Image (cartoon, rainbow, N blue to C red; front, side, top):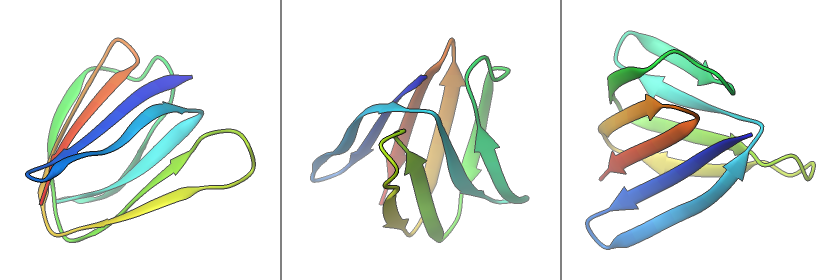
Length: 79
């Protein structure tokens, strides 16, 4: 599992664990799974999709932002 925290200027949008998640990166969409290599990436308009493992995905529409992945912790700042 990975720990994901999605933050916006108005507060925390999502704070939980997921099997994996996909992000709208500037160079194209990408997925993050457990033990993913550390990265920092800019995000563009699109959807962040979290797969918490209960069979229901969580979808968050964003305008832009960035994501940091490190040690199975994913921190996302978005507008």
